[in-house]
Image (cartoon, rainbow, N blue to C red; front, side, top):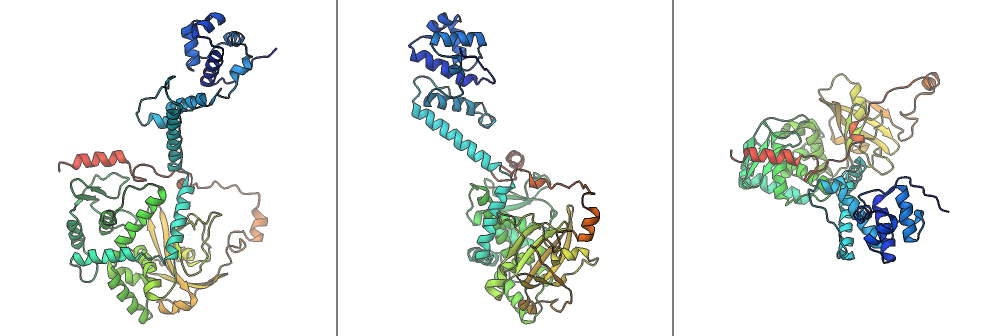
Amino acid sequence: MSTVETGDIDVATLGHRIRHFRTRRGMTLDELGAAAGVAASQLSLIENGKREPRISLLSALAAALGVQPADLLSAEPPDERAALEIELARAQRGPLYASLGLPAVKPTKGTPTETLQALVGLHRELGRRANEAIATPEEARRANTELRERMRAQDNYIPEIEELAEQQVRASGHVRGALTHREVSVMAEKLGFELIYVNDLPRSARSITDLENGRIYLPPASIPGGHGLRSMALQAMAHRLLGHTRPQSYADFLRQRLEINYFAACCLMPREAAVAFLQQAKKDKDLAVEDFRDAFGVTHEAAALRLTNLATRHLDMTMHFLRVGDDGALYKGYENDGLVLPTDVTGSIEGQVVCRMWGARTAFTHTNRTTELYQYTDTPAGTYWCATQVGTTAEGSFSISIGVPFDQAKWFRGRETTARTESRCPDESCCKRAPAELSGRWAGKAWPSARLHAHILSPLPSGSFPGVDDSDVYAFLEAHSGA
């Protein structure tokens, strides 16, 4: 005799199996109810997965249907249609579907199986996209790696955006020197936009463009990190000029962000003027990011990145760029000069620790941080010269470095430095493994509490535009629509 093991009963599957065996025997609800001693209305609730039967009733139902109780309790749906109905019901009870505010579809006998297949397929795809959107930063690292490799293959240079920016800058009336706020406003006006400075931008947004009323809302002053008002306004305009549409993936979002940053840099440091400045400095063997920065009124990081755009195509040199935190973590990196950047097994550089011997880290040990620091570093891939500037934000100190192979250092200010280190990384004996004396003294006797970087485990930002709260944006626009 079979025994009944209830465990965690899946009432939806149980109900479908009871209905399956009932219809197979040609019994109505009333007939099965009479045979098992239960009202037809109660039996209907059980078959619809809304009530769990007692063990005694389950045994009576099994006997009336000529099967074992274990047959009714099987976790397998009785047929393909039942499986579809069960999956649809589960999907519609989930939080993802509930967030859409749509009514639930209740299949009936007359609902075609093809309709159920289509509905279940839609729910599966909805779930897949939701899971993709809330992926861990692994998703972002993968997309970042692909974008970095693509830009390295084209020398960090996008000629189409260079041309577009040159046209816009000329149309603004700009002739020489740093691009002014007035010239940026003229560029906006020619696109049909007015720049408006407000104090109540949502915290998640750097700027908001009101497409209906032709307004670009900006904060009243620069925000931490060195993003000037000119740059933010230019980035907002770039979305329109570059024909961007709503990003369809995180990779799409990253590409658009790179393109608007590139456009802003091209406007603030126009190719023609920037190349002329840099070529003269190269001729004088006095290339320096700090001079380039001051000549065009931009941040040190912006100038360093712009130099990587122009170096290979217009100055005939390869180089690298690094932004490194005071903990040694690499936050941004670019190279086409053979320098081996630290990577994880997927090829991602973000968050990887830079060698302690590199100038990007030795710079933190210097007390004088007002000017660039110069250094040669011998690495397994060759000897490199670099110039590093240290800066500070609310989150801590960081360094901005540009560097070139040894034979190209002759074009730069600071080439005569005597500072020289040796890096054997990725060999762990270089700087990652503790010296034998210290290891022998302290191994097994220390238990530090690590500081966890929140971004390591956080999901990727979601929303129409990743990282921006749609609700805040729409409320902001509504509040300003009558202004």
